[in-house]
Amino acid sequence: MINIKYLSPIFIILLILISGAKQVENELKPDDVKLNGKMVCLSEEMHQHYKLELTDDHEHLYGIKSEDGKYYTLLRTSLSEALFIDKRLHEKVLVVKGRVFPKSNLLEVMSFMSIKDGVLYEIYYYCDTCYIRTVAPGNCDCCQAPVVLIEKPLNSDSLIPSP
Ligand SMILES: [Zn+2]
Ligand SMILES: [Zn+2]
Image (cartoon, rainbow, N blue to C red; front, top):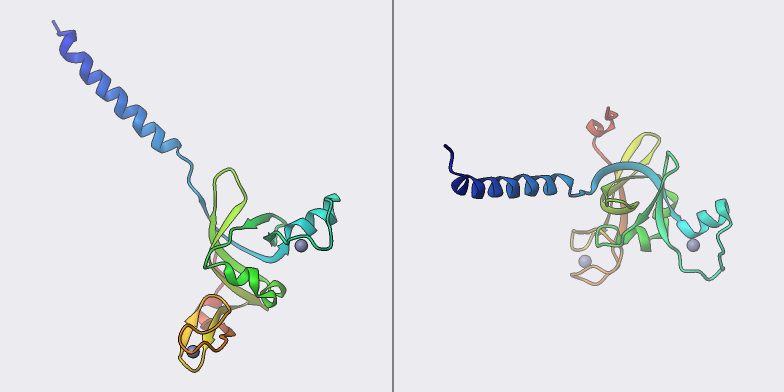
């Protein structure tokens, strides 16, 4: 006969393990995304489409409107900083790679490029005195001169459209 006293702790441990594994499985993870779109002020977009109240001196709420019409709220990090402060980037069609967080449309930018006539362009800032490359506009860390925006076509390999 099986002794229940010895069996039950094993069952309890098994139950804990199973429920633990289930919890990990259910834990929500950010979605990796790659999207084409343009920088927009989300408040202005919502004003235009849904009559959101808007003042001329409102603080812009920046986001990306993807080519398929979805809006993503842009989180400000060192990698996305340039998109907030360099208005020249607002004119470009961007190819953005990043993460969208669970139950939200909050977008963390990991990298971005621009695309023009099917050609991808690398975007970065550069000090040609010190040969230093940065991800955001501002003054060079080394010589303090302002860095310049560089938009450089990627090599021809990257022109092959991804499936
Ligand atoms: Zn605005
Ligand atoms: Zn410099």
